[in-house]
Image 1 (cartoon, rainbow, N blue to C red):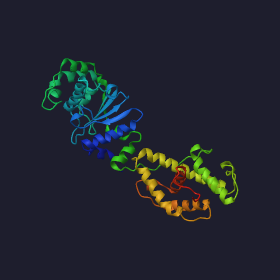
Image 2: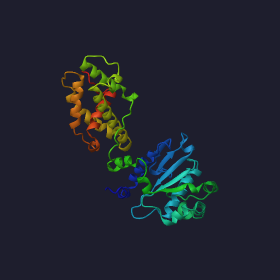
Image 3: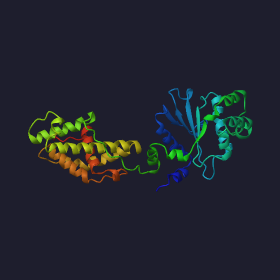
Image 4: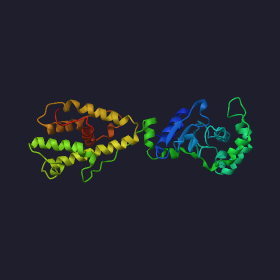
Length: 334
């Protein structure tokens, strides 16, 4: 078993910010937009989730990433970072974040943790010890005084919104395998088997129509539609098998689209297309013969990439019907 806890702990500061940004992106329904701020102009922000299109004029969350390789996030550093973001808020750079998360994979020191568990005491400590932890540390070469406007912002801020995101929480998140795959090449595991609906679905109509046309060509008759095929002695069973393959491939695509990097599934599909192209281009007696030849080839091709071990025969064959749906493949010779 790969220890992803250890792998996250070995990330450098920038690596942790990128990992956190991708992890926050899993919360798509929670944020209007997600941005990363870096460098001298980050103004106390690392990864920001904007709640509304108003962005920094509206509600937003700040994810402050702190990677210490040998110890937990110390009290002084935590207070400095909180002071920094409230200082820039007092200057009108943005509204104060409605939630402030420390992302510190190695954990948070006990003194800082105790203050976070008592929000009013956290506020009092920041005010009382401003000069010690913040005054000369927010802007290099300058001293930031606790002026009345800044003091007012700190006094009115809801410190109960200051919390932590633990590494256990991050690795237990829904769809975290997507982030682990992007950063560490994690195997997302097998996709669930497809479920075949009793009735033909709207998104099946293109490949089903191509199958009905192939059956009609072989039999030399005109079939009005797929309903006539269901009770056919030979074609009925064949159609049923093709639907099973289609929905296995559909489940495969949905799973890996959600749990791997955006380019992973298209690369796999490209491998399958190249694996069947030459066989598809041969001469056949009819369209059904071409379909049968392609299905036999799809069953034996061995695509590369991280999805190959999870793509069984029905999936590779079912993808061919998806290619028909997408207009990439046709059974009738042009």
